[in-house]
Image (tube, rainbow, N blue to C red; front, side, top):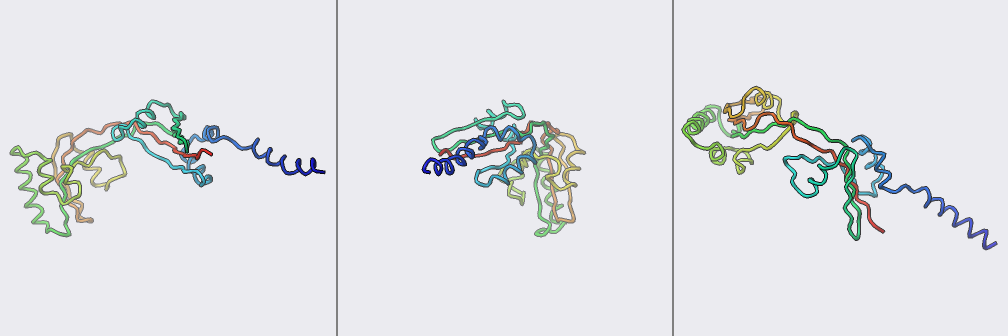
Length: 210
């Protein structure tokens, strides 16, 4: 009788242990961002999220290791308490743009005041002042501290009028731009040509070590 009871309780546990799929193997079946999102949603006990790595923005050792992998490759970091998996879901070159700008808020200044400032700034720039210094001095935007540098961005991240103006100018062009429906006014310096930059879409999953 005792042997029968032992079999009743132990056999199901053995069956569960046999059918449990290791996380490393389960990740092999994930090949798209939609697969990854479904996996994250269905495994809330694991810390999973999708990340984007940009070859120009991310210079860490981790990023360097990930960019060496092919699509579908995995990088694993193990500590005493957890295992973190990084799986490359996608790897592609994406066109990026980059400019610096000086911003004026039309809710705080009249258009005449803005145009007077822009005329003065353009005159100073043409007389040898650095755009970076002028942005720090005049821009009404938080990125004034960075000399007006917007950093790399892809199509669709900025206002369409802003993006179209950038695409229609050459590198080193300085020009004014008005987005009147938002009361946004600019002087823009195009600092780079449209540039393809490698980006990774990465699924990060952390598994506790028991």
